[in-house]
Length: 308
Image 1 (cartoon, rainbow, N blue to C red):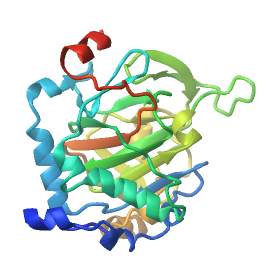
Image 2 (image 1 turned 180 degrees about the vertical axis):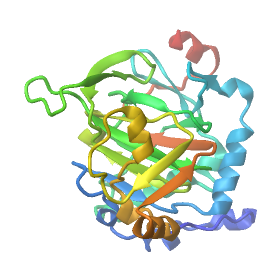
Image 3 (image 1 turned 45 degrees about the vertical axis):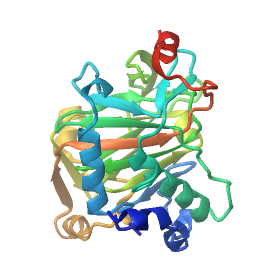
């Protein structure tokens, strides 16, 4: 499925997206089972050459673009930042996302063609969140907030990770166990409590695309545990782990085993019952659409003033 990168400028200008979108399987082919209402995992959405190119472009970003959060993780926004009232203060997306290799249009085309309903799944991407995770870094359970359309695509670069999906605790119909943990919103502030049992674990390999949609995005949370290696098991242990440390040792089952597309991992799970992966530096690009956009742009002092 990946579209080979081409550094010929003339070829870039004449590149026709229909030449590769026609080969896309239906979106349902990539649905992760037993995660309502819908999550999709597409392995090898881009080539290794494109991955290297995108990583290089991210690393070349001016230092002022980067913002460091309390855990030391770095992030940046392309396409503009959000005001405190949930309005996008827009800026142009960088050329390498919109013209070459044009990842933004490729994601839009994939959703449009693979959904089999023209235009139905168009995202209208206007912001890309960039997160850099060093080995051992993670992010607490959080949601991205109601300012964004509930259809979000995340491209993983450089290293694998395991994404955890969580339920909020429902006070009228709680699910066991009755142990809760705090959530965090996009700015790291405390939120509602979530169930102690994780809804699902997803292995995200380099060059893969993960799509979260509908209430899975709006009323669930996602997180990444802070660790340097991951253990994935093919079968649950005889007795469930009693604490977090034991859980790390025992490993987790992933919900997208049938879709990961890596024969080495599949062979390890089948022959040894587990796969152990050392984390490296991972960069994630999260493509999303802010529902409200400031008309006329938000460049320069105007955007900074409104942000304050």
